[in-house]
Image (cartoon, rainbow, N blue to C red; front, side):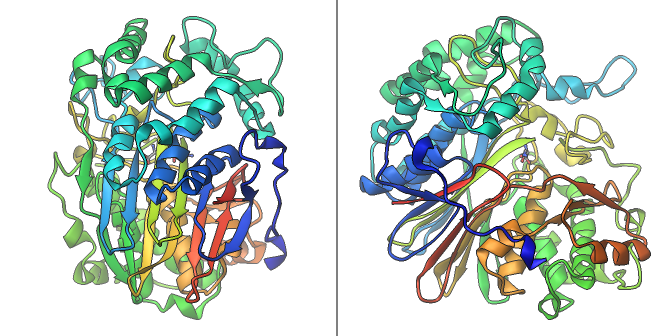
Length: 561
Ligand code: DON
């Protein structure tokens, strides 16, 4: 299987429009320098440029997010939301939750028809699918950890939008695949739809987005949540069935939450608490797997996959039952990750055969959950670490572009449980805890994570992939901590995923066939899928060497300051 591992691929510098002195690659090993790993070479470069200008990890990750909103519109955004997990070199840890919220006019049954049937087209596409965007508020909330002013941090994104950049082959293919949906969900023709198909190398100049970014640069968060941009967003809502009002936008607030921290084999895992299920699931899965001395086995071997999948099954059953926005429901995290609770949960584990999902959770009661997202991992030369996962949910979110403002709106409402037992676009089900309520945050799976060893950054990791996010981050940690694999092998080796419902275990196409056969013999139902996640990982060894790896599955890139 090792042969499958992708070796270092150097990016051509032709994509690098502006900062040609910055090194952009798939994998790097450096010391005493800052690195940025993101889904796009120009976005990583924007972050590295900010590091060079004297910014820290938080300046860089904010600049990278703005740049992704320009060069990676399928997921990078100002019309969506995300989570930042930070661990500063002085020991301080923090998170910023800029998840979207449900509009004031949202209600529990808003996606049900007269007969009580859920219409997931409405929660997934078009104006009614949009949650109140949190990203811009999140960037401004991050400023207190930054060293540079916002007008400098946002500038690389403005340059990319204004001067344009050459799109990659992957982005061209993605835009072409969405043409029909863009036409269906927008009232007039949009920049992203052309007569002739997009191809790699085409120049994309975004005038309206440039103006929106300049308003933010000039007026701060008000340049987005009030005034012209807000008016355009609300006007876009009124072109269809959208319900977001000016008041909703003005009232949006980020939440600064205490990071969820737990020990894993002597390492301090710092991750996102609710309303992301990611951190809780990660703690549950790692702790259950630890009951079986996972380190004895090898990556993607049958016993290792069994242990990990069975931990996933039990944790995801809890997700459906108990997890939601902690400002609206009782937060049961400490109980759910406690040793006693998990030991009890693990009693039914057997190496002999798969545990049926019906034995670990209440299937009848459960509803279902909903795909584009992106992760950024950053470390600066002083040892400040930043981990952000940000999302529009589906590719280009709701597919609705705000006319006149040039950005896509999310379809995050689908991450609520639109009806108990009805799966969202990721097949996740949920219930009462994740039911829709005005101002509530929809449950997420995003798992931006930092691991500290002896108080110093050891790993910075995260990925997109909907419900596969926590399980991918879980595999990354087990790979490095238990299997002692390097970051490149961990990121690029084939991944697997299970989420309680459906009963299936998904594996990437190149997953070892021997393991697949052995698992089938133990009653596991295996489904091959093209891709699981796009992981951006930084590992820092005991000598302080930074090993940064951008996922080989996409255009993902590492930039060094
Ligand atoms: O917050 C969540 O869990 C989802 N909206 C994330 C979506 C996602 O990762 C799509 N990526 N492929």
